[in-house]
Image 1 (cartoon, rainbow, N blue to C red):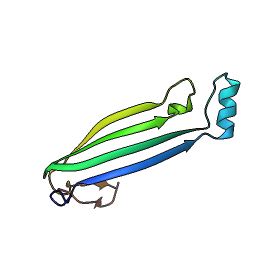
Image 2 (cartoon, one colour):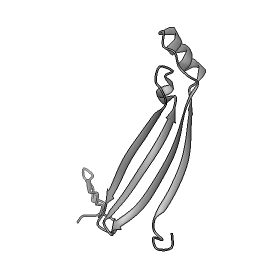
Image 3 (cartoon, rainbow, N blue to C red):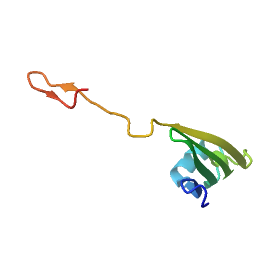
Length: 106
């Protein structure tokens, strides 16, 4: 959108296949499995302020957990990101016995 050039819309598909050894182990324990789980996700990202971003999203999951006893599921979520508008200062200090201090000291 021209009036919101920093916003983003994304779509993803994830496919998780269960291996035959795992399925055989589950069957040995009497637990049925499907061969895979598939997830479709739609997400939107918007910066509300220079320090706050919101990322609402919705997922549709087929065969959640590869458990045939569970029905397909909808997952709705809201992530947020808080920052100070730049990189956070990171520092590490390590003293080596008998040697110099390694790293940056703030």
